[in-house]
Amino acid sequence: MGRKFFVGGNWKCNGTPEEVKKIVSVLNEGQVPSSDVVEVVVSPPFVFLGLVKSSLRPGFHVAAQNCWVKKGGAFTGEISAEMLVNLEIPWVILGHSERRLILNELNEFVGDKVAYALSQGLKVIACVGETLEQREAGSTMDVVAAQTKAIADRVSSWSNIVLAYEPVWAIGTGKVATPAQAQEVHFELRKWLLANTSPEIAAATRIIYGGSVNGANCKELAAQPDVDGFLVGGASLKPEFIDIIKSAE
Ligand code: G3P
Image (tube, rainbow, N blue to C red; front, top):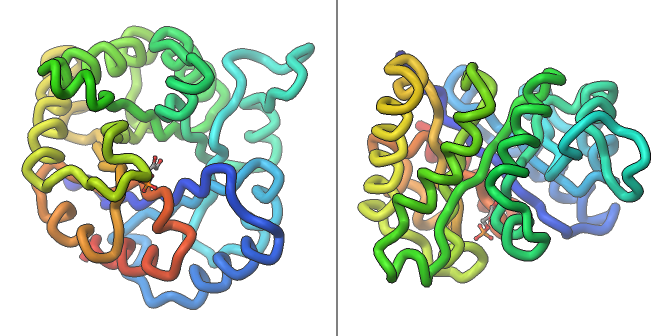
């Protein structure tokens, strides 16, 4: 079964209203492959979700960058999955390394969030990835397997999950993983899914790469058999995001 290429743009904590309008107009004017070939999802900060959703070209969708782990209520500063669903925001990014490392989100907590978001009808971009220290210690696969297990333990269907492999050492550093490094981990993750979920889930789940992807390096990465797309940070704020979308072809 073919896996449709997926390109996500994670805008992180960036953008003024003017900048956001500019990015949207670049996205809306870009010549890109059809939505049969590539699924495009951009993730602005919460406050711009409405603006982006209402002005984005048909076929492109939006994602929130986080949501709360259970039903909303007395959780000051949080945004619940139900709120996103009510506003027809289809996707959410969970488990990004910036939240794992800066805000101390543990594997189990991320797994709980993924399970709750799915239960409410959201689709999830679930992020995993090792630090430089962990890579150098040879524990890359142990780390990403433990992060993936915390999700697998809590969900039965993976049809609304895209798994994003984002090595922390490659994020925002300009040090992109080589195509071989990315392929190696993606292959191992798919093998892990095969051993721990089902052949159908392993074959159908999209595993996308994130970490210093840009217009110049995306083609070679996209050519790897287990790289099913990208989660793009810095370059998703620039016109070269269009080139990254085109790497689906
Ligand atoms: O979620 C995307 C991300 O963390 C990668 O960021 O700026 O290295 O493309 P960047």
